[in-house]
Length: 315
Image 1 (cartoon, rainbow, N blue to C red):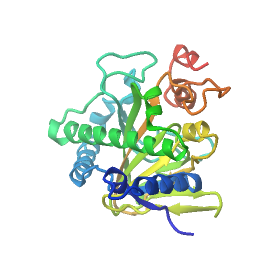
Image 2 (cartoon, one colour):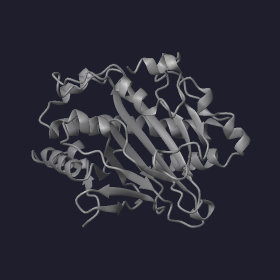
Image 3 (cartoon, rainbow, N blue to C red):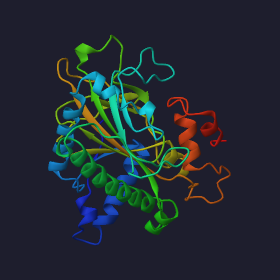
């Protein structure tokens, strides 16, 4: 059993023959059917942006714990900011995740209930040490997420113009993550326990040379390690895409175990979902009229300790 395919998106972005774009669409479709995951090069996110982001993560996560906790995402009505190690525990896991995280999203000046639009919080660091490289990377991966959606739609036989029906003001969140060294975790503790992503497209940057991501492959009944290669990003489909595509595209379980005994590991995931009020654009006759927002609330409501009023909006 081989690893996840690496697809060169430059053939789609800058085709040299009429068949180049169709070849990429077919490769993405096959990967999403078989694995729910694939890797990309030629993606348009510069190496300097990737390296700048990794350095920014090091700058932030190296701050004293008391400074990070002041930015707790639990204090933000938009759930932006810092999540300490041990705060995330999935059903079935014996121990909470060892990771610590920092969340940002679209920068909107006013909080809009239930809180998926609003302002970010930023650490007290010089802009060039955190905010500028983080925001530059966020904007670039936001563009890449839209491109991946376009390719996925074409793989299902739809025109890219369908994007207009659910991407007027999409929810795009970014989660920056630090995993402690394996020696600093408890026996049996994961960096991130096995789970599938909730929604749309996920774009993942792994710190080069720091292994940890594993993807479950049903057919081989095995966890496939995903190497952390410089300038190669990892893409996967979430549960919402699996549902909207009637199961054509797969949402696969994955987990992270930092393989390095003595070195920390950084990664960053950009989640590109779609408009809060959007329902399944691929099937207007879908009997489920759940919106992106309702699905988000049902998946994350308990985890984020949202109010009863906010949870009522999911029903």
